Structures are given as C-alpha cells and as structure tokens.
Image (cartoon, rainbow, N blue to C red):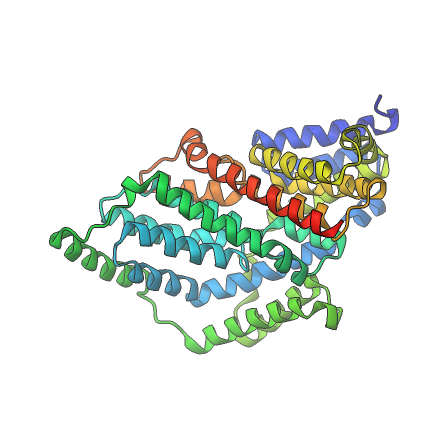
Length: 436
C-alpha cells in the first residue's frame, strides 16, 4: 500500500502529468498549478519549494539559449545549411546523408529545436523544388536531431538534468554516449537508404532535371542568404561558443559548473556583440524554464514524502539485483515511456528512483545513468509527440502543405527507435560486462 502521507503529492503530480500528456494547457502552467496546489495544501512551504529547484539546470539552459540566440542572429546556421544544400547537387540520397550528419552533429552542441528550425525549411524547399515528397526527409531531420543531441551534456534536456543532479561532466557524457549516438545515426541513415531506396533514386539521368536543380539551388542561396553576414559579429559569437565548450571540457580542471560557464559566456557575448538584452530575452524560452522549475518542486515533494523510494522499492527493485536486468529495464522502460510522454518530467522523476536502485545494487561506472539518458533521448523518436523537435518539424511541414500524421511518423521512426535501443542494449551489456 502507498503510505498515506504521500497520497496528496502523488495525486497532484499525476494530475499535472495528465495535463501535460494530453496538452490540456501549457505545460508550464500545469506544473506551476501543481506547485500552487502543494503550497495551498501545506504539503511544502515556500522555502522548501525553492530549495527543490535545481538552479544549475536553469542557468545552463538559459545561458545556452542566449548563446544560440546570438548565433542564430549572426546567420551562421543558415549559411552552413545553404552550403550543404549546394553540396548535395540535388541528389536525394546525398540530401538525406549530408543534412542528417550536419543536423546530428549540430544537435550535440545546440538545442534540437533550434537545429530543426534552421535545417527543415531548407530541406523542404530543396526536396519540393525537385518534385520529391519532403515528409520522409523532415522526419529524418527530427529523428537524427534527437540521436545527435544524446551525445553530449548540453545536447538534450534529459542529459542536462542528469548531469546537474549527478555531477557528471561534459567529458563523461561525450566519451560514453557519443560513440553509440554516432552508431545510431549511421544505422538510421542506412535503414532509410535501404528500406526507402525507391525514394532516393538519383536524378542525373535527366538533363532537364539537372538544370532545374541548379536553378533551384541558386534560388535557395538568394532566398536564405539575402542578408549580408556581419563577419566580426559572427567571429565573436563563434568564439564565445567555442570558449563555452572548451570550459565544459575543462570542468574537472577549472571546477566551474556548466551552468556558471553558460551564463558567464552568454553575458560576455552580449557585451562583446552589443546585442540589445531586450532582443535576447525573446530568445529565452521562459515557459520551458518555468516548466523545469515547477517539475523540480513537484518531484522534490514526492521524494521528500517517500513516494520515490516506495516506487523504487516496490516496482524496480522487484526485478531482482542482476545488474544486466536492471540496466536493460531502465533503458527500455525509459525508451518506451519517453515515446508517449514528455521525456523531461519522466527523467526528473526517474533520477531519484535510479539513486535508490544504486543504493541497493551498486552498478559501476555510472552505467545506469547512461541507460536512463539513452532511453529518454532515443525514446523520444518513437512517436510524433515524443520530443519537441518532432512536433516542430511536423508543424513546419504542415505549413508548407505536407501534413505528417501520427501513424506516418511512427511508421518511419518506430523501427529506427527499436534499432537504436537494441544497439544501446548491446553497447551497455558489453560496457557492463567489461566493468564487472
């Protein structure tokens, strides 16, 4: 039986989760309403609520949002995307491969949504202009952005949360997760190239098509590069991004946390570029930050009242103490659940559960954290609602007259998700075997 004292915080948390899942209201509003209910019912005090908020995560997110906002203003992302479009020469398979590689790599260091906002419009214009159906290309960009974002601490919100709560560094995420992220990206490209090979036939058999593609590429260059690039501004922005990543890498030497690094570099960048702070405040996703803060309080309340410990002891620990079984259970539960529910609240909820599991069954080298990260990030590819990048990409396609249904997205992404999770299973099993 669930202890009586945890009943109210559990009910409030479940109501918030339902509101988020079925999009009954904005997720930040749902989370903050849940916090208000906890405060009114005296489940937590104001000081306790503030204490539950992980400001390291908030600072890291805010700092990176500002840095990426300035970079986007510089036009560098559009410049790169247009250059990649030119390199494809209108070859459908090259469009898939090159844009997937660039999107995957960019997503490891930038926000996934920002990456698809830049790449997807150019992919749509390029493919539609060639007479191709852009939907599979759009889905591939969303999927690869989630795979690539898994590679680093700053690539995906679940990693940011895990890193902040556990103290894992940028280097640890990059060393342990980038290999499997790269393998999964290549597996995705190979899968689409083989299963949908009819869609990627080359066009070099038609002189008229080759001419029309060259004309299209010139049009894309004109449309997307109509503004002059301010090179000094661009160099300052790129320099600050490089400095931030360098400080993330040197965290073990400098002892400066990623949140402090991101905010400090963001403020220095604003001073150097003289961008109006009012303009950059529009780049900050305040709703997302409030959503995070509310969830931290809700889960902190559950943890303080023993609900998290009860779930861990009565559900996850019932599977036994075999490290292989526990690791794969965390991976696949995270992967499947994150495909249908927002992976951010799921990750925040799972972190204290994993901590309880580790107290009962110590598993070396942070393997359980990698399992949670891989499941939460890769699982977002399972359905259209699994990740923000999926929804944003589908919305952009719809605005161009190409609607991507829930089933169509699942048909193209479901197999890739299962393949990536199976690859993760092998990777984690070998890693665990070598560690024991």
